[in-house]
Structures are given as structure tokens and as C-alpha cells.
Image (tube, rainbow, N blue to C red; front, side):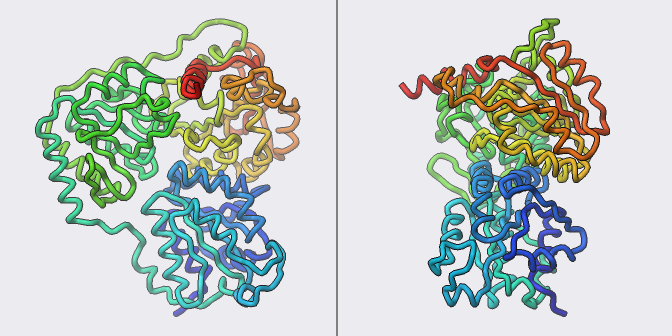
Length: 544
């Protein structure tokens, strides 16, 4: 019994845990969408534009382990290339499915729409090769093989992958037999054994090890396994800014955030004094390394990446999950002298009336409940959120590497659909929200009720902190945010504008659980969280 290609793709996506397709329809993908809609358990989520759909797919993939983004050729795929590039930078497995022109049109070099009218059809595929771990344009001869290769690459590397399906091949009859074997990375037993032996040698003379938990631990859903391994061996943990929340901050082994010397001197000292550093899925980018004030890797450092591990100059082709498994097995047989974690202090609560960045984050700290999904956009929202002591069971989404403003609002849609059990809490500045605010309508359309704290500081305060604070290019046009939200959302929405700490606390406490909530917090344009000021100092020092 045969099935069409679109159904095959849909069933492969369902096997990987995908239940929603994000995107925008266009004439080249309509046949594909018609047949994907017939796949049981797969729902279409349309966005006002492709960029928002890409951001939503990114957040969905962070929770589910894979997401599918469907656009049309040319205009559609280029509209969301920024979002997909962000997924590449942040190690997020989004499969971008593009409905492309018919095979005959491509072969004949016809001057069709959505092209540059020059008969060249692979320009945009070449663009996606720069940001994708795998790229395939489906052919009749290798269709299912190409689909499987693209999906497996995304799952294995936790990176975006690109799949172009010509209009005429969406209904191609294919053999469904490969569906009997779920897609999964292949374990290299010999490499795993070599890694285990190398790790055992490192453990033999270690006295003060430390685990540095990076964002790939979250991407592979291995936070609980890593924490159990640390508990077995008594190894202290620090997390990067990109992995904040992956390990409960109340856990006795959690010693806080490590970003070189930028964020926490105590975590920096712990890593500097360690005689064995176990880095799990970290990236030493400028921001995540505290502008390169981190401890460089050496012969006493294990670095675990998505598809290989590194100790000194030696590389081991072991998949991330397998490397964590080997590390956990070793940890179960050793015990180090425990290091007491310092108490992660809550921001002190005061009764100050003036709403400043400092007082705003105190109020958020006091209110934020356990079990939420916290999303923070680039700028004061992220650096304020990074200063919080998260309640237990907090999922945190941000973009500390790619830093594309406007990401977090559509990401709230993706996170909310990926895990309906968690109420999203969105922290976003007015400049960022102006980029993607139309996605509020999609969030409401699909029944999500996030709490949105919109920081209105009249523009780009993160840029003001970095350079030329009074330059006009850092200002944005003023919007009536509560009226705008009410016009975009055709379901009940609870809106408030607050200008004092007391008003903010009251707005947070009275936020109804069965409605979307938007709280506009009016702030001084030049006020910034302490961590953002520290970032600016290091950034400016590096530029001198």
C-alpha cells in the first residue's frame, strides 16, 4: 500500500512529536498543505507573517525537540530566514519545508513569479545552505530518503534543516515501509568506549570538579539526567545564561550563573579553581563568556557538543545523549567532597513608589509562580530576567547568542502550543514588541492566555546603554499599547498601564488566569538593569 509524499512527511513529523505546523500559505505550498492537513494529529497554525511563524517554530522546537515551518518559495522563505538563522545560532531543530515551483518549470527555466525572473531557481536554497545542517530539494527518485535525511540531521545536530518540495511532487506516491523504523541518531559504541576511558582517567585524580551546564542540555531534554549524575557524585553545577532554569536554582548543587566574571564572582571562582571542568553543551560567545573572561578549555576540560566530545586535542564522535549517558555512568561510581552552594538571594522587596528597573524586577521576583514558561526578549527584558532567582520548574526561553529583537512575542505562541500545561509569562520591551506585535492575534486565536509585561521605555534602551544614549535612532514612535492589544485580540484581554511599583504589584496579583493579560510598565528611557550596565561596561572596554 502506497501513500503520497505529503502524508509520508506528516507521519514522520508526528513520530518525532510534532503536532503543529507553523507558517504562511502560498500558491507553491497549497497542494502540500492540503494533504498535510489530512494527517491525523497534525494541526496548522497560521501566522500574520513568516518571520513570526519562524520565531514560534523555534520556541516549539526547544520544548518538543523538533518543529516544522512551512512557507512558499522565495518571498516566504526569505521572509523568515532571520528566524531560521537564529535557530541555527541557538541550536534549535526547525525543519523548514518550502513549497517550490513545479519540476518542469525549473527544468525549463521558466520566468515564474517569486523568482528574479532569470530562470535560476536554486538561489534561495544556496542561502539556506549557510544556516542549515542539511538541505534537500526533493526528487521523484529519492523522495523518502531525502525527507528522512533532513529530519534526522535536524534531530541529531539540533540545528535547522531545509526541505524543498516541488508542487508536482507533494502528491507523489511513495512506499511507506521506512516509517516502521523511527529516526534516531546511531550510537558509535567504539567511540563511546574511548570517551568513557578518557573520562575515567580524568576522574581518577580529580578533587574539585565542576559541571558547566549549557543550552544543549535543554535542547536534548536532559536536565534531570544531568542533575542526577551531579547528585550521585556530589559535583557542583553552574549554568550558562543560555541554560538558566535548566537546573532548579534552589537545588543545593546549583552554584548560579557562569558567564566568566561578568555575572557572578562566586561561580567564576568555582570554575577557575576546579581541577576538572565538565562543559555540557556550552558556547563561548561574547555575551555567554562574559566577553571572554571565561576559563579557556584545556587538557582538564571535557566539552560535550551535539555530535562529538572534546578533551584537549582529542575528539570523540559521540552523540550528546550518549556522552551524557557515559558521564552519568561514571558519576554513579565516584563521590567527591560536596561544596555548599551559596544561597541565591532573592531581590530585596521595598515599598518604593517610583517604577524603576530595580523595583520592577523586585516586583516580578515576588510574584513569579513556579511551573511557568518565562520568555524574555533581547534588551532590558532579558538582562532583568537574568537577575532573577527563578522559582522551581521554570522553563526559560531567550536568545543570548542571536539577539534578534521581537523574537519572544511569537515564541510565546510556540511555547504555549508545545506545552499547554505551563502558562507563558512574556517580558518584552516596546521596541521589540513593535517588531512582531501582530502575533498577539494568533496567540489569542489558539486560546493561549499568557501574562505579558511590556516594558515601555520609549525605544531601544539596550542600545542607549551601549552607545549614544540620546541619539534619535534609539527612539521609537509612541503607541497606545492597551488599545492596540484590545484591537488585535478578539477574545477577552485584561490590560493595565502602571507607573508605580504599587500599581505593578497590584496588576500582577489581580491578573486573571482565564484571560490574556497585558501590563504596560512605563519606565525611564535611560534606566537599565544592573546586569545590562555591566554588559555595556565590558562591551565598551573590549571596543577600546
